Image 1: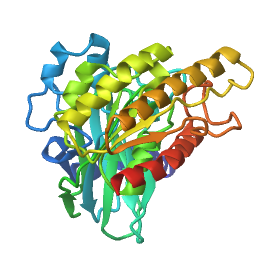
Image 2: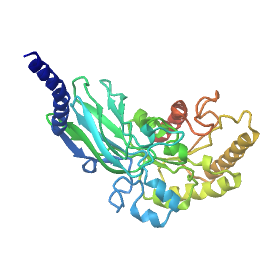
Image 3: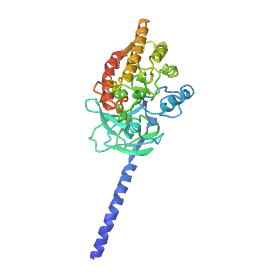
Image 4: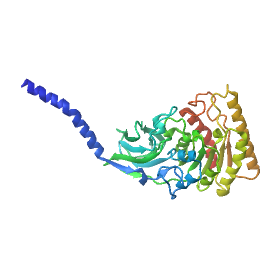
Amino acid sequence: MHDRRHFITLLGATLAPLSLRGAEKDAAAKLRWTDATAMHLEGRGWEGQERLRHYDRLPAKAEKTVRKVVWDLSRHSTGMAVRFRTDAREIHVRYSLMSSRLAMPHMPATSVSGIDLYARDAKGTWRWVAVTKPAAQTVNARLIEGMEPGEREYMAYLPLYNGVEKLEIGVPSAARFTALPAREKPVVFYGTSITHGASASRPGMTHVAILGRRLDRPVMNLGFSGNGRMEMEIADLMTELDPAVFVIDCLPNIARAREVTERTEPLVRRLRAARPDTPIILIEDRSYAHSWVHERSRRRSELTRAALRATYDKLVASGVKHLHYLEGGNLLGSDGDATTDGSHPNDLGFTRQADAIEPVLRKALS
């Protein structure tokens, strides 16, 4: 009898984990999944035009006009988000990524390849909820469970430095789930790796995303890492957009003052010809964190800033209206703690950059 009871005890110990795994599978089977292609994709332009991948930032025709490196970078989903309402107490995601490079030396997988979830609190303020931690090219994750009861509006940001092949949002089958429609005109940011998102810890921590939440309006991210060069091919594509504001932040990728002078005026005039009343903001280069002790970096910023300011003054004097300007000296503060590598902002740097841009952006929007 003792041996029989011992056998039953061992059998129960063996079966318990199997039963638990079965319960987990059963719970997963009771989820209702919504493919994000059936939802409005915020932060994507050129609607109605052919595109090679649903989550590409540029339309298919751009592959023939922009440089290959720009096209390749445009396949990253930075700046895109889906919005929805649900009373679910747990939220799941499953998605597949374009690239197996999930992280970079100065950026974690949470930002390069993660899905970053925010929700409005009872006061209507956007608050962080959860982020995925990708360990493989295909992700199936429960973002959060055990949330307090109540229906909320959510926004899920897509990866910064990876492309998305497929994305689904999952909630328990008994929960309500409503995909939210498009909002008003977006703010379009054209820039460099900093605009692209290097080196935020999560997709929601870029200054582009932060400003979108603060202003409670859509944003579109046309940051191309190392390649935000005020190119006319990009300008031509931008003229097809109808945003609330154009924000031009390309100086970190233009090393010579002469090139700043040569490229800024044609870009502004091309945008102004297509959109006579849309505000345009020109932003100077940030200061390198080590520029206080590195003369060449300091001098480069001084020269490109002077060239941008001179071009801005010339444009205003010639009658170009709704043109705004932001100096770059305090974009990242002055203590040197706002970057990962002296150049790219960390989360502190992105917050400071959003603080600096916000007043100018609000003025332009008004």
